Length: 419
Image 1: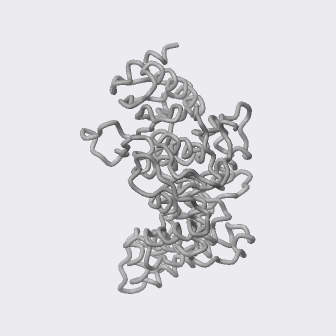
Image 2 (image 1 turned 45 degrees about the vertical axis):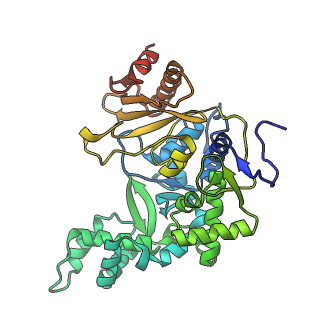
């Protein structure tokens, strides 16, 4: 048998922890070698189809997080290619992704829009508390903001403040924030959508002016079938997973996640297995690849789908990971914006990175090796140095990489970066 292949549908009753880890990495695209030539939209589509959803986040201290999952799997690629697929550009647009609350704010393939309409229909009960309250207490404000989008879209959230002042009724007291909240309710409920982003700021417009007619004309599936499809996407993307892993991928309510997983097991679409060291039942995607070896090397965004569900990250890799952006600086353990480093099939290090765009330098503000890393410290440092050089060039940080002294890996990494 080939070392890396799609196996027959009959799954083993039990998987070793190492086998489960390799299955998970292969499902996420880390068992494939990076392209050696020019990376184009075809490569991006393959990754996007494989992971199913890409999380967005506003932090830009290193790089916008939605660019990183493609880099981690493909290596350097033209970021404008993703911008075109997501319509985050003023140039030629080939929209293949739309924005919605999937796993947090996310870019999602257009084909899944009908499968998220059940969430849009539940905005009155599922949207964040402040959004729900405003919509319930001030429905006319929501309608006024919707009318503003109809008349002037695409608009920015800040554009609603002028509308509030202009449309304020006698005796009403609106603050600048309430128009934005109304717009967020309309976004959650699917009455408006993101036309594009400019400097990462959303421009809101009506779905019929943004999404392809073929998508809007697709019948809305029943809630149960829509959720089953989301679980299928998650199962393909995860390879082997617990029910909470599967439900978290698209943030399904736990009760419904349990029901959908059970239905897919009963239908033979998911296979129940035991994984060594896991204290919960696991479910294997029948067509998941089971490689005997994974030779990956990648820096991972804190919001990469391989690691975004922290209990799964700890279960798969023995790697306890918490993002410390909101932790006061004196109490941070590893740093402000820390990226795990994947080498082979293990998370072997973590680095706190900052793109100093003015100086043209990628700054490693701290670097730590994992105690459990199988590779030697010098090997880890050498591989990490090569990855950091490559990512600095991709980010146009022409002055290269500079390493601060913080962290037990920092001396070896600084030495490895010496020309």
